[in-house]
Image (cartoon, rainbow, N blue to C red; front, side, top):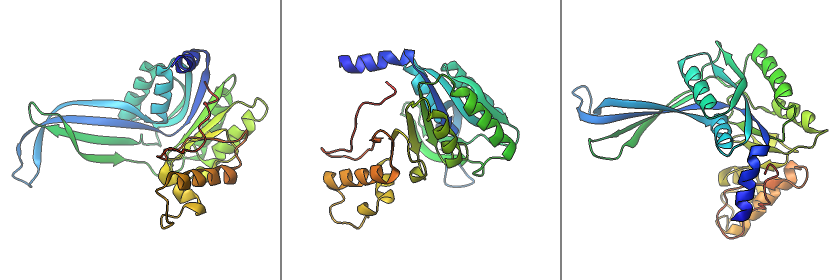
Length: 268
């Protein structure tokens, strides 16, 4: 426990850059008043709406909560949700000076509707996603490149958070790789759909399905996939194929006693 406390305490001395797709997580709370006459659905009386940072924004806010100096490089739409999310991030202590606000972009928003009766716990009944098309306009990408170069000056670590909305694509990965080559600072990657395209970094955080899908060794039809050793082998296969520098520290949600390598994170 003392070692863990020392790691958490050291965050206040670290400057970390988070590059990736920021998402607005919205929660709409309502009380069920009656059943609609228009359709067999509940009518909710709106109580309140909460907006919280998601995606790369959530990562940045969590790091700031641990005491780190955090700079976020991302893109938000210059819309109401983007303004709210930007405000929430600043309230959390995140440096948003390198967040691009664009009129050509829509802020990615995940809206969760939670309903319940007067004295009951609110439960999620539906989620509505407001996405923009993957990819960014050339001028926005140029702004990102400039922001990344400026933000990484003096950084102790970099986190790439890729949700496939266009900010943290492999091109950005190449830019980061070139920037850290001299200073040799750790780079951690969390990519939901294309982790194999981000090779040569310090650490990765695939979940079980991502390791399985990536690895030819770990076909879903392969007998014994449920055994911890099979999952461990699949994770090691990922490490070899991605050729992560310094012996890639792999964080994976593989269950069982034998998990993939889990050396302490270099950012601590």
